[in-house]
Image 1: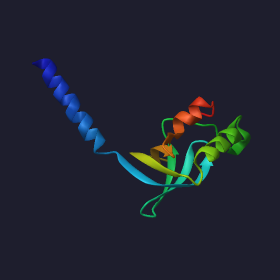
Image 2 (image 1 turned 180 degrees about the vertical axis):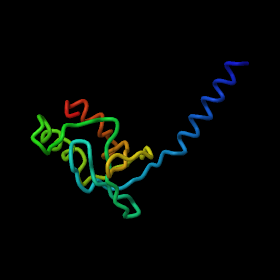
Image 3 (image 1 turned 120 degrees about the vertical axis):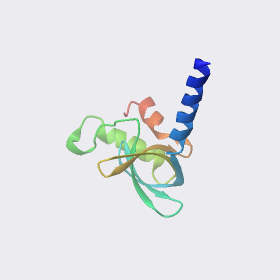
Length: 116
């Protein structure tokens, strides 16, 4: 009985967590860094996005591989159709989200290529 109650509570928490997620389709207008983009959704609303869960080196300040990481994300995403899955969090002036470029997970792409 106790196990059933625990599983029920976990299921409810999982469902409640999903209600906070917001998936938007649109276009990646501009890559600003190896882990940040400007995204235009289908309602013509612009979103400054910080891609989660990665942390890429900065292109500013001459950090090692910063420019390579930036170029890698440009090749994958810039000007392409995509989707963002907003987490509801914000960092600095950006919304935190998972990013998909032509159905490719951008964070996994950056990780596999050593860019984050």
